[in-house]
Image (cartoon, rainbow, N blue to C red; front, side, top):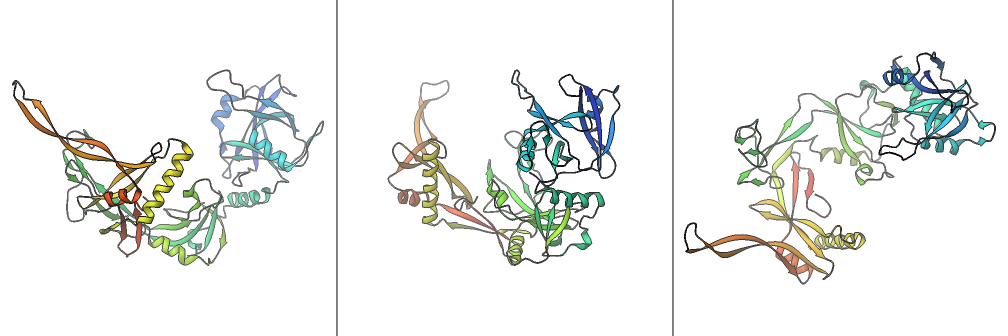
Length: 426
């Protein structure tokens, strides 16, 4: 279960009359936040029966809760109600909890027939969702510690941040503080035409910004649109922000969440609950990650490089494609490599044909054809482009024909910011 559950000091309980409960009262429980503001009041007022007085209770650990029955989950319509479990509160009303909450409770306490749930519980909220929190759970101590910070407003202050130290937020995410700096951001300058993809009724034809010497061509990112190049530049924000390395979670589902990455914030008010570590042995790695980030250091578009893609990388990309193709039957039957076009980095798809076991690309050929002239019986010869499949007997032949490349993009400090079309990097 999450440890960012908010446990208020007071709860506010509204009621409806319900015959399918032990006490004929079903409750909607809301709470006062750390500033004394009543949360979720609008929906609560719309739901409750004003003829039944509401009750305000101190939210302290107590025992005597009893499981009642499942409600919801029926699929008679297009929008079925989520499944909940009703729980009896010893103060004489019933309320509803989610199935994940029920499973968490049963992992941490016993449910005895005729006596109910063993142990003490408090009310908590995970975002907008009510959660009945078992005091005996292994997470409760950490939940308590975070709530002490919230209620006492003892969050880490900006003046107390130490460069290189690791801090934790309410969600359990950990950040390494790297100092303050004015962030950089890149701008792109597209040519807008009176029609087509970049057309807009709010713009005149031409580039979005006047072309001066601040706009540069990037070999890795610039491209032509109807013979008009796209330009780039880096501009710096006016105010300093707090830079951090957000530490990846090794058990996260997605690779993006497993990797360390640079982030920055304008303020850290009520952000961090405590310091985890003052010094890190891997701090030099954090420095390298920071110095290779385009939001921390200015981009050097003129330093872009186009480099031949090594054959072993090309083979590895092809092998990964075959594995995906076999695994998903028809999915993932191509990969993309870089290809130089007009001294810029373009790309081309390489396809794998499962039936023949061959590789091919969609090649452009120029063909001639005869066509009658307008309002005449005479014929004229014309040319047109056509896409055809070009097959290769082996990967090496494909590699030699395409001559794949990849791009390297650098920052003004000389650090490599990233590679384009290099293996799985793009």
